[in-house]
Amino acid sequence: MTGTVRDATAATDRPLRDLISIEDLDTDDVTRILDTAEQLLPIADRRRNSVPTLRGRVVCNLFLEDSTRTRLSFDLAAKRLSAEVINFSASGSSVSKGESFKDTALTLDAMGVDCVVVRSRSSGAPLQLASYLDTPILNAGDGWHQHPTQALLDVFTMRRHLGDLTGRRVVIVGDVLHSRVARSEVQALRLLGAHVTLVAPPTLLPPAVAGWGVGVADRLDDALVDADVVYALRVQRERMHRAFFPSSREYARLWGLTVDRVERMRPDALVMHPGPMNRGVEITGDVADSPRAVITEQVTNGIAVRMACLYLLLAGAATHTEEPR
Ligand code: NCD
Image 1 (cartoon, rainbow, N blue to C red):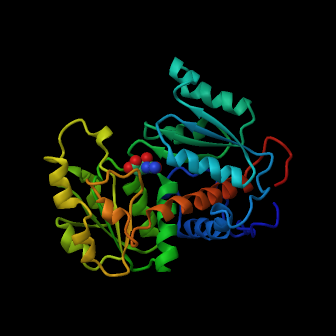
Image 2 (spheres, rainbow, N blue to C red):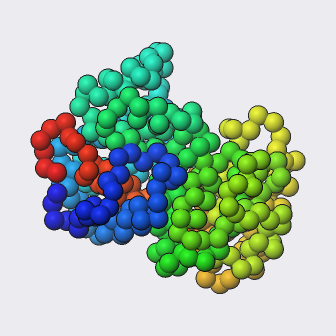
Protein backbone atom coordinates (compact mmCIF):
# COMPACT_ATOMS: atom_id res chain seq x y z
CA MET A 1 0.00 0.00 0.00
CA THR A 2 1.14 3.50 -0.57
CA GLY A 3 1.32 5.81 2.40
CA THR A 4 -1.60 7.84 1.08
CA VAL A 5 -4.26 5.98 3.02
CA ARG A 6 -3.61 5.23 6.69
CA ASP A 7 -3.77 1.49 7.30
CA ALA A 8 -7.49 1.09 7.84
CA THR A 9 -7.20 -2.68 8.27
CA ALA A 10 -5.42 -2.83 11.60
CA ALA A 11 -4.77 -6.29 13.05
CA THR A 12 -7.92 -6.24 15.18
CA ASP A 13 -10.23 -5.46 12.24
CA ARG A 14 -11.58 -8.43 10.35
CA PRO A 15 -10.89 -8.03 6.64
CA LEU A 16 -13.88 -7.40 4.37
CA ARG A 17 -14.16 -10.16 1.81
CA ASP A 18 -17.22 -9.04 -0.16
CA LEU A 19 -19.78 -6.28 0.25
CA ILE A 20 -23.13 -7.84 -0.51
CA SER A 21 -25.44 -6.67 2.25
CA ILE A 22 -25.33 -4.24 5.17
CA GLU A 23 -26.58 -7.23 7.19
CA ASP A 24 -23.10 -8.75 6.88
CA LEU A 25 -21.49 -5.72 8.56
CA ASP A 26 -21.23 -4.69 12.20
CA THR A 27 -20.93 -1.18 13.61
CA ASP A 28 -17.12 -1.32 13.54
CA ASP A 29 -17.12 -2.31 9.86
CA VAL A 30 -19.41 0.60 8.96
CA THR A 31 -17.34 3.04 11.00
CA ARG A 32 -14.14 1.79 9.35
CA ILE A 33 -15.62 2.31 5.88
CA LEU A 34 -16.84 5.82 6.78
CA ASP A 35 -13.51 6.80 8.37
CA THR A 36 -11.62 5.54 5.30
CA ALA A 37 -14.00 7.49 3.04
CA GLU A 38 -13.33 10.61 5.07
CA GLN A 39 -9.61 10.29 4.29
CA LEU A 40 -10.33 9.69 0.62
CA LEU A 41 -12.83 12.53 0.17
CA PRO A 42 -10.25 15.14 -0.92
CA ILE A 43 -9.27 12.79 -3.77
CA ALA A 44 -12.91 12.02 -4.61
CA ASP A 45 -13.88 15.70 -4.81
CA ARG A 46 -10.67 16.56 -6.68
CA ARG A 47 -9.05 18.79 -4.08
CA ARG A 48 -6.21 16.24 -4.37
CA ASN A 49 -4.90 14.21 -7.30
CA SER A 50 -5.53 10.52 -7.92
CA VAL A 51 -3.37 8.08 -5.93
CA PRO A 52 -1.60 4.96 -7.19
CA THR A 53 -3.05 2.75 -4.42
CA LEU A 54 -4.75 0.20 -6.70
CA ARG A 55 -2.39 0.42 -9.67
CA GLY A 56 -2.30 -2.90 -11.52
CA ARG A 57 -5.67 -4.03 -10.12
CA VAL A 58 -8.54 -4.70 -12.51
CA VAL A 59 -12.06 -3.77 -11.41
CA CYS A 60 -14.95 -5.04 -13.53
CA ASN A 61 -18.24 -3.16 -13.52
CA LEU A 62 -20.81 -5.86 -14.36
CA PHE A 63 -24.02 -3.90 -14.87
CA LEU A 64 -26.94 -6.12 -15.80
CA GLU A 65 -29.55 -3.45 -15.02
CA ASP A 66 -29.67 0.16 -16.19
CA SER A 67 -27.74 2.61 -14.08
CA THR A 68 -26.08 5.91 -14.74
CA ARG A 69 -24.93 7.47 -11.52
CA THR A 70 -23.93 4.34 -9.65
CA ARG A 71 -21.93 3.00 -12.60
CA LEU A 72 -20.17 6.34 -13.16
CA SER A 73 -19.49 6.66 -9.45
CA PHE A 74 -17.83 3.23 -9.24
CA ASP A 75 -15.93 3.97 -12.43
CA LEU A 76 -14.54 7.22 -11.02
CA ALA A 77 -13.84 5.67 -7.62
CA ALA A 78 -11.72 2.92 -9.17
CA LYS A 79 -9.91 5.39 -11.46
CA ARG A 80 -9.07 7.82 -8.64
CA LEU A 81 -7.28 4.87 -7.00
CA SER A 82 -5.54 4.12 -10.35
CA ALA A 83 -7.21 0.73 -10.91
CA GLU A 84 -7.95 -0.41 -14.45
CA VAL A 85 -11.68 -0.53 -15.10
CA ILE A 86 -13.51 -2.74 -17.54
CA ASN A 87 -17.21 -2.25 -18.16
CA PHE A 88 -19.53 -5.14 -18.92
CA SER A 89 -23.20 -4.32 -19.45
CA ALA A 90 -26.09 -6.61 -20.28
CA SER A 91 -26.85 -5.22 -23.71
CA GLY A 92 -23.96 -5.78 -26.06
CA SER A 93 -22.57 -8.67 -24.00
CA SER A 94 -23.01 -12.39 -24.38
CA VAL A 95 -25.38 -12.32 -21.38
CA SER A 96 -27.97 -11.00 -23.83
CA LYS A 97 -27.15 -13.99 -26.05
CA GLY A 98 -28.16 -16.32 -23.22
CA GLU A 99 -24.79 -17.02 -21.64
CA SER A 100 -25.29 -18.29 -18.10
CA PHE A 101 -24.33 -16.17 -15.15
CA LYS A 102 -21.86 -18.83 -14.10
CA ASP A 103 -20.10 -18.73 -17.49
CA THR A 104 -19.90 -14.94 -17.29
CA ALA A 105 -18.31 -15.27 -13.85
CA LEU A 106 -15.79 -17.85 -15.03
CA THR A 107 -14.90 -15.69 -18.02
CA LEU A 108 -14.22 -12.69 -15.79
CA ASP A 109 -12.08 -14.86 -13.54
CA ALA A 110 -10.10 -16.17 -16.50
CA MET A 111 -9.47 -12.57 -17.57
CA GLY A 112 -7.74 -11.89 -14.27
CA VAL A 113 -10.29 -9.51 -12.81
CA ASP A 114 -9.47 -8.57 -9.18
CA CYS A 115 -12.92 -7.33 -8.10
CA VAL A 116 -16.43 -7.41 -9.57
CA VAL A 117 -18.94 -4.64 -8.97
CA VAL A 118 -22.33 -6.10 -9.84
CA ARG A 119 -25.75 -4.51 -10.41
CA SER A 120 -28.62 -6.84 -11.19
CA ARG A 121 -32.39 -6.94 -11.45
CA SER A 122 -32.38 -10.19 -9.50
CA SER A 123 -32.16 -10.16 -5.72
CA GLY A 124 -29.40 -12.56 -4.75
CA ALA A 125 -27.30 -12.27 -7.94
CA PRO A 126 -24.22 -10.84 -6.12
CA LEU A 127 -24.33 -13.68 -3.58
CA GLN A 128 -24.56 -16.19 -6.39
CA LEU A 129 -21.57 -14.58 -8.10
CA ALA A 130 -19.61 -14.77 -4.84
CA SER A 131 -20.25 -18.53 -4.78
CA TYR A 132 -18.52 -18.87 -8.19
CA LEU A 133 -15.59 -16.51 -7.63
CA ASP A 134 -12.87 -16.00 -5.03
CA THR A 135 -12.42 -12.36 -6.04
CA PRO A 136 -14.21 -9.73 -3.92
CA ILE A 137 -17.78 -8.95 -5.02
CA LEU A 138 -19.30 -5.53 -4.46
CA ASN A 139 -23.08 -5.27 -4.69
CA ALA A 140 -24.14 -2.16 -6.62
CA GLY A 141 -27.85 -2.93 -6.17
CA ASP A 142 -29.74 -6.21 -6.55
CA GLY A 143 -33.48 -6.24 -7.18
CA TRP A 144 -35.48 -5.12 -4.15
CA HIS A 145 -32.87 -6.59 -1.82
CA GLN A 146 -29.85 -4.38 -1.07
CA HIS A 147 -27.86 -1.34 -2.23
CA PRO A 148 -25.17 -1.22 0.44
CA THR A 149 -22.96 1.53 -1.00
CA GLN A 150 -25.97 3.85 -1.32
CA ALA A 151 -26.75 3.35 2.37
CA LEU A 152 -23.10 3.89 3.30
CA LEU A 153 -22.82 7.12 1.30
CA ASP A 154 -26.04 8.33 2.88
CA VAL A 155 -24.92 7.70 6.46
CA PHE A 156 -21.55 9.21 5.55
CA THR A 157 -23.33 12.38 4.36
CA MET A 158 -25.50 12.49 7.51
CA ARG A 159 -22.47 11.97 9.76
CA ARG A 160 -20.58 14.82 8.05
CA HIS A 161 -23.44 17.21 8.85
CA LEU A 162 -24.73 15.89 12.15
CA GLY A 163 -21.73 14.15 13.75
CA ASP A 164 -22.47 10.99 15.73
CA LEU A 165 -25.82 9.58 14.57
CA THR A 166 -26.72 7.99 17.90
CA GLY A 167 -30.23 9.09 18.82
CA ARG A 168 -30.71 11.11 15.62
CA ARG A 169 -34.13 10.85 13.98
CA VAL A 170 -34.39 9.92 10.31
CA VAL A 171 -37.68 9.83 8.43
CA ILE A 172 -37.71 7.72 5.25
CA VAL A 173 -40.72 8.48 3.10
CA GLY A 174 -42.17 6.85 0.00
CA ASP A 175 -41.99 3.62 -1.90
CA VAL A 176 -40.44 1.41 0.77
CA LEU A 177 -41.92 -1.76 -0.73
CA HIS A 178 -39.82 -1.75 -3.90
CA SER A 179 -36.77 -0.07 -2.41
CA ARG A 180 -33.45 -1.82 -1.93
CA VAL A 181 -32.19 1.56 -0.72
CA ALA A 182 -34.69 1.61 2.17
CA ARG A 183 -33.76 -1.92 3.27
CA SER A 184 -30.04 -1.13 3.34
CA GLU A 185 -30.55 2.34 4.80
CA VAL A 186 -32.56 1.11 7.78
CA GLN A 187 -29.90 -1.46 8.65
CA ALA A 188 -27.02 1.02 8.35
CA LEU A 189 -28.83 3.65 10.43
CA ARG A 190 -29.69 1.14 13.14
CA LEU A 191 -26.06 -0.01 13.33
CA LEU A 192 -25.12 3.62 14.01
CA GLY A 193 -27.81 4.06 16.67
CA ALA A 194 -30.22 6.32 14.77
CA HIS A 195 -34.03 6.09 15.12
CA VAL A 196 -35.83 5.48 11.86
CA THR A 197 -39.46 6.23 11.07
CA LEU A 198 -40.98 5.03 7.81
CA VAL A 199 -43.84 6.92 6.20
CA ALA A 200 -45.53 5.43 3.13
CA PRO A 201 -48.85 4.74 1.52
CA PRO A 202 -50.06 1.52 3.20
CA THR A 203 -49.82 -0.25 -0.17
CA LEU A 204 -46.12 0.62 -0.40
CA LEU A 205 -45.06 -0.71 3.01
CA PRO A 206 -43.66 -4.27 2.99
CA PRO A 207 -45.60 -6.73 5.18
CA ALA A 208 -42.38 -7.68 7.00
CA VAL A 209 -41.75 -4.12 8.21
CA ALA A 210 -42.79 -5.03 11.76
CA GLY A 211 -39.52 -6.91 12.10
CA TRP A 212 -37.29 -4.07 10.88
CA GLY A 213 -36.93 -2.32 14.25
CA VAL A 214 -38.30 1.00 13.00
CA GLY A 215 -41.29 3.21 13.73
CA VAL A 216 -44.07 3.59 11.18
CA ALA A 217 -46.12 6.79 10.90
CA ASP A 218 -49.22 7.51 8.82
CA ARG A 219 -48.85 11.24 8.44
CA LEU A 220 -45.71 12.82 7.02
CA ASP A 221 -46.45 16.19 8.63
CA ASP A 222 -46.40 14.70 12.13
CA ALA A 223 -43.27 12.64 11.50
CA LEU A 224 -41.27 15.58 10.13
CA VAL A 225 -41.55 17.90 13.11
CA ASP A 226 -38.61 16.61 15.14
CA ALA A 227 -36.67 14.86 12.34
CA ASP A 228 -32.97 15.51 11.76
CA VAL A 229 -33.17 14.08 8.24
CA VAL A 230 -35.97 13.41 5.79
CA TYR A 231 -35.04 10.93 3.09
CA ALA A 232 -37.39 10.77 0.09
CA LEU A 233 -37.40 7.54 -1.90
CA ARG A 234 -37.99 7.48 -5.62
CA VAL A 235 -41.37 6.19 -6.72
CA GLN A 236 -40.20 3.02 -8.51
CA ARG A 237 -42.66 2.97 -11.37
CA GLU A 238 -40.73 0.34 -13.28
CA ARG A 239 -41.42 -2.09 -10.44
CA MET A 240 -45.15 -1.36 -10.16
CA HIS A 241 -47.39 -3.67 -12.08
CA ARG A 242 -50.60 -2.33 -10.58
CA ALA A 243 -51.84 0.94 -9.09
CA PHE A 244 -50.37 1.44 -5.61
CA PHE A 245 -51.75 4.99 -5.20
CA PRO A 246 -54.47 6.97 -6.99
CA SER A 247 -52.31 9.44 -8.98
CA SER A 248 -48.98 11.27 -8.92
CA ARG A 249 -50.82 14.40 -7.78
CA GLU A 250 -52.37 12.60 -4.87
CA TYR A 251 -49.00 11.04 -4.00
CA ALA A 252 -47.32 14.46 -4.05
CA ARG A 253 -50.08 15.91 -1.84
CA LEU A 254 -49.80 13.23 0.85
CA TRP A 255 -46.19 12.00 0.70
CA GLY A 256 -44.26 14.53 -1.38
CA LEU A 257 -41.64 16.91 0.04
CA THR A 258 -43.02 20.38 -0.64
CA VAL A 259 -41.69 23.76 0.50
CA ASP A 260 -44.57 24.14 2.99
CA ARG A 261 -43.80 20.82 4.57
CA VAL A 262 -40.06 21.23 4.70
CA GLU A 263 -40.42 24.69 6.29
CA ARG A 264 -42.05 23.03 9.28
CA MET A 265 -38.91 20.96 9.88
CA ARG A 266 -36.12 22.01 12.22
CA PRO A 267 -33.99 24.71 10.57
CA ASP A 268 -30.90 22.48 10.44
CA ALA A 269 -32.72 19.35 9.22
CA LEU A 270 -31.41 17.78 6.01
CA VAL A 271 -33.32 16.71 2.89
CA MET A 272 -31.92 13.70 1.04
CA HIS A 273 -32.80 11.59 -2.02
CA PRO A 274 -30.83 8.74 -3.67
CA GLY A 275 -31.54 9.94 -7.22
CA PRO A 276 -32.77 9.83 -9.87
CA MET A 277 -35.56 12.16 -8.70
CA ASN A 278 -39.09 12.42 -10.01
CA ARG A 279 -39.38 16.18 -9.48
CA GLY A 280 -42.97 17.11 -8.68
CA VAL A 281 -43.82 13.67 -7.35
CA GLU A 282 -41.79 12.64 -4.27
CA ILE A 283 -39.99 16.02 -4.09
CA THR A 284 -40.68 19.42 -5.63
CA GLY A 285 -37.99 21.14 -7.67
CA ASP A 286 -37.87 23.98 -5.10
CA VAL A 287 -37.08 21.60 -2.26
CA ALA A 288 -34.55 19.64 -4.33
CA ASP A 289 -32.70 22.86 -5.14
CA SER A 290 -32.97 24.38 -1.66
CA PRO A 291 -29.93 24.86 0.60
CA ARG A 292 -31.08 22.20 3.04
CA ALA A 293 -31.04 19.52 0.30
CA VAL A 294 -27.70 17.68 0.24
CA ILE A 295 -28.50 15.59 -2.83
CA THR A 296 -25.52 16.65 -4.94
CA GLU A 297 -23.23 16.21 -1.92
CA GLN A 298 -24.51 12.64 -1.69
CA VAL A 299 -23.25 12.11 -5.24
CA THR A 300 -19.73 13.40 -4.49
CA ASN A 301 -19.61 11.52 -1.19
CA GLY A 302 -20.62 8.38 -3.10
CA ILE A 303 -17.29 8.43 -4.94
CA ALA A 304 -15.35 8.61 -1.65
CA VAL A 305 -17.39 5.82 -0.06
CA ARG A 306 -16.96 3.57 -3.10
CA MET A 307 -13.22 4.32 -3.11
CA ALA A 308 -13.16 3.24 0.55
CA CYS A 309 -15.04 0.01 -0.22
CA LEU A 310 -12.75 -0.85 -3.14
CA TYR A 311 -9.69 -0.07 -1.05
CA LEU A 312 -10.81 -2.14 1.94
CA LEU A 313 -11.90 -5.11 -0.20
CA LEU A 314 -8.82 -5.14 -2.38
CA ALA A 315 -6.33 -4.39 0.40
CA GLY A 316 -7.22 -7.66 2.10
CA ALA A 317 -7.60 -9.80 -1.04
CA ALA A 318 -5.25 -11.99 -3.01
CA THR A 319 -4.32 -10.48 -6.34
CA HIS A 320 -3.95 -12.00 -9.77
CA THR A 321 -0.65 -10.22 -10.17
CA GLU A 322 2.14 -9.53 -7.72
CA GLU A 323 1.48 -5.79 -7.95
CA PRO A 324 1.83 -3.59 -4.85
CA ARG A 325 -0.39 -4.56 -1.91
C1 NCD B 1 -31.14 3.84 -6.57
C2 NCD B 1 -31.24 2.43 -7.12
O1 NCD B 1 -30.96 2.19 -8.28
O2 NCD B 1 -31.60 1.58 -6.33
N1 NCD B 1 -30.53 4.72 -7.47
C3 NCD B 1 -29.22 4.68 -7.68
O3 NCD B 1 -28.50 3.82 -7.21
N2 NCD B 1 -28.71 5.68 -8.40
C4 NCD B 1 -32.41 4.39 -6.11
C5 NCD B 1 -33.53 4.39 -7.08
O4 NCD B 1 -33.40 3.98 -8.21
O5 NCD B 1 -34.60 4.81 -6.65
